[in-house]
Image (cartoon, rainbow over all chains, first blue to last red; front, side, top):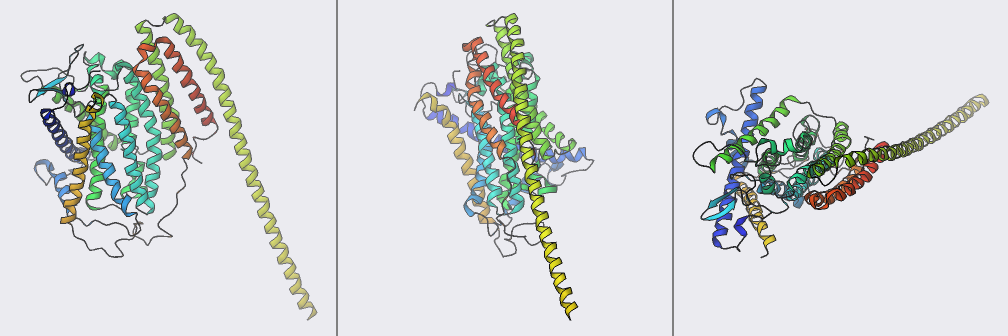
Length: 435
Length: 121
């Protein structure tokens, strides 16, 4: 609730130095983590598929990503002749910058203790501060906003290419992103409910009291599972990678991109994977929480944090190696008919349990009111469903009628053509007869 | 500068650095890369054959209804987040209010579902 102690007594040049260090460290960390992730994915999935994977550049091929990056700089950059020049150039910027921004709210270290007012701080250059780039009071909303803007990068890239595959890819991308964005937001609300704050630092501090206080358990496992599925869909990772399904759409939205512009999209995508894993650790797995074993106290939380992130990175790769891609209507059904109702329902159940725990409502009254409400809901929903059915039938009937009319018209046209032909033939016969 | 805006200062610096880095990468690449465009290279890619029809095609947006529904649920999220932060203050009354609110929205979703809006058409 207090915000970063760095800013509490005005801002001087020392504070700017701390900010600079934080920005540079976060930048380097994110880039190194991303390069590592690209290599890790290739190596790990090669192991799963009984291949060797990259093994030439550096030990175990660990410099492969670096080599690929250098290669991108030397490749010719092609822009299709009828692409929209401005938007085509703008789109990689949007993708890359939003990918960086989302990482800024993740606390990557600091010893959090339960019940302390100013917990999880470190001292840099004699300034007390949090180990995260920024701690805005609306951290989670910032994350949601940034991931919404990231969709524009994909959408504009596909549209501006002036080509068919990218256009189809970007239409899919926008439909998928908005469907799962809703589920993603609703699953986070359960965490916000328990933490009583939107700031990522407060959410982490709320999980400082041991494993049982981690929101993956105390919010119930449901919000985490919904968040995981929705995040996988937001990241366009398999099994939700319809946006860039190679077998159907070549490369999807980035088909027409080459050289370093393509590299920026590629980088943004893997950066988002790293960031989403970090966000999941922050929201549900206590962030940097873990035992301090020996020696430097500030060192261990960061180690625990990255160990947890690594687990999620491995899981995303495992998904890719194991799960077949969903069909498009299955994807939409899962988002709208399962995840969103489930997220909303669970939120209400969890809120009720919280209120009973805090003693603001009597459990007996809660149960009685609950049963009455369930009855009322049943009646209302039956009404809504019947009305929906009726509207659907009406639509179907209208469609059928239109089809029938069309068929009738077609037959009339055919009949006319037949008649005309008959008349012509008759005329020919008559002429022959008269001859 | 007000207290509220200070925490966004670092985010501003961070986004500035991100824009700078993306720009720098593009700038370096511009110096290094070769540039030999020709007409064939600049044709839109269509699996290696000549493009069929015009390149600026139109695509059927099958899911425009989803966009409408999305706006609905996003507006709902706008109400949900502040409610979740301050539920302790509102107590049982706030809870009942939210149940009624979500119930009405769920009714709408159920209706749309049965009407076949959420269907591949």
